[in-house]
Amino acid sequence: MTTGTPGDDVPAPTADQLSAEVARTHRQLGRTMERLDEAVPDPADQTTEGGHTVAEVAQQARDLAGQAASTVRETVTHVVDAARAHTPEAREQLDQATAMAEQAAAQLGQFAAEHTPPHLQEQAGKATAVLRANRKPLLVAAATATATAAGVVALRRLRRRRGLLS
Image 1 (cartoon, helix red, strand yellow):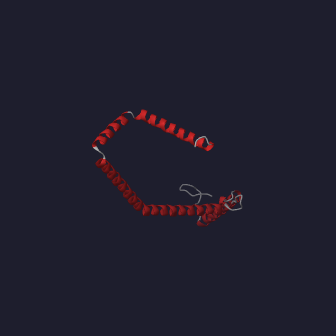
Image 2 (tube, helix red, strand yellow):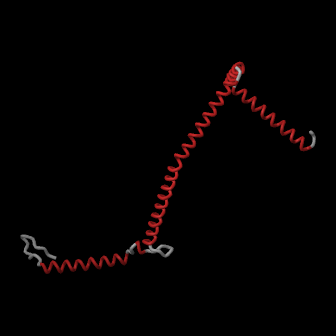
Image 3 (tube, one colour):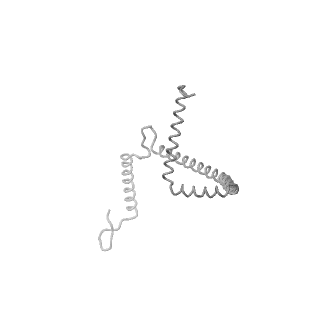
């Protein structure tokens, strides 16, 4: 195509010439697009091993993801609602049980203090001080005594079963 510019001897194209050139270019572009469509298949139209198109599989995946998200939202909402419904009751019951245990311990301590003679209270205080000062050796001695007692009991049971003790 020739173009007319000022100073050129070439005449400017007419409107009919421009329309014809646009139509020719449009036809060429159409043929090029058809060849590209034939050479490069649309990925959404390709089939998977199961015979479904990629577009179908993608839609199924989106549907499943939506269902899973909905199920998770419902489950979380249910758990949160249940926790909110039961938490105040559980806390109240736990607070009541704690208060009752503290009250019972205080009453027991007061009862023991009121009914224990002074000389026994003094001896208990001394024994507590000795125990705290010698905690480790006393724990070893207690463990040894417990193991010895368990051994004696087991030996007696064995002898009774065999008829050696009456």
